[in-house]
Length: 177
Image (cartoon, rainbow, N blue to C red; front, side, top):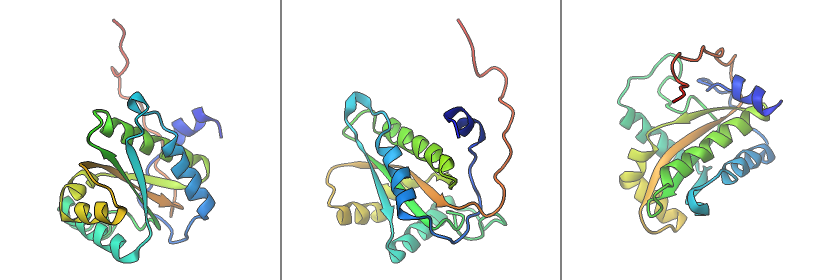
């Protein structure tokens, strides 16, 4: 798949199979995130793979609480749509480009996942999650000090069904002065 094809065809999955992708594929997705451009070459973002089942359940419950929405037919009670892999992107607030750095990492990871035949979905609410007690617990377990911001989660795995079709680009989003 060319980069152009990946950009044009990548879409977020809203249902995942339970099958775990091979570690090498997940590592390649993470590497793509780590290779993303960062402001002033600070590399302020950190990618955390959440494997601990108890912590995954806690993060899922906290995200459902933050979302405040009832279960939907697409995801049921799981705001991660049943994805077997949960990646968390956080960034050091000491860097003024922290949010942007983490966002670029997530973008790179979504494109790499698609290139490898994996599905992904950027899950918001990491900012709220990391600002609360659960965030403090995660930072403590990681041994990270200072102020960190949750940029987003990446739900990752194999799509359970077709991905949405490409949409038309909204007019007026490209302008020249």
